[in-house]
Length: 193
Image 1 (cartoon, rainbow, N blue to C red):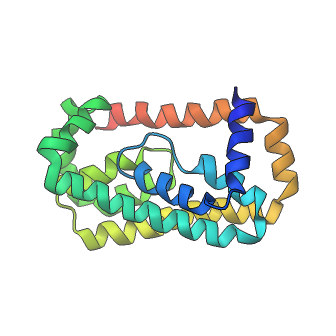
Image 2 (image 1 turned 90 degrees about the horizontal axis):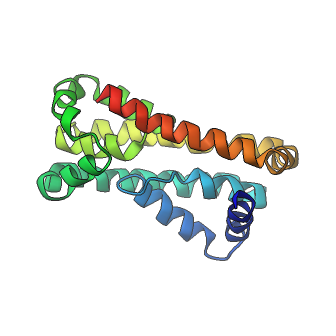
């Protein structure tokens, strides 16, 4: 099954609408979608290394715009849309405690979540709920998301075919590690929030 998903992602990576698909996934991942855009970013860069910087830029811009959408959910729609999303992910009970500390450390929280497997969408919504300064939020998002996606693209661009061979030979282990990190991010939230 993982091999089929990888093959699908590789075929999508060379599709003429691949950048639009990446932009869409990057955008919605930043506010509601649970799967990070890396699952398409990585095969896209591996399939078209000469486009690595463009791919990373599209991913970054769409992710930050999606993050602003998540911020808007928290700011304008928390009671009707944001709270059910937070509850869906199981973080409603501890969310109120989290709000008190949030604005003091907001830029660092956004920056950390933008770089790590920590679910960025929770931070985008929390930033809106707590009314974190939108300029601080945007700058922290651009820096952290940009670093994350450009570092991934840069490593894939630089190492190219050996990285692709490594991924294809170790797909099962890497997929398990990826999902463990993703799941670990959600578990971490349970204990932090």
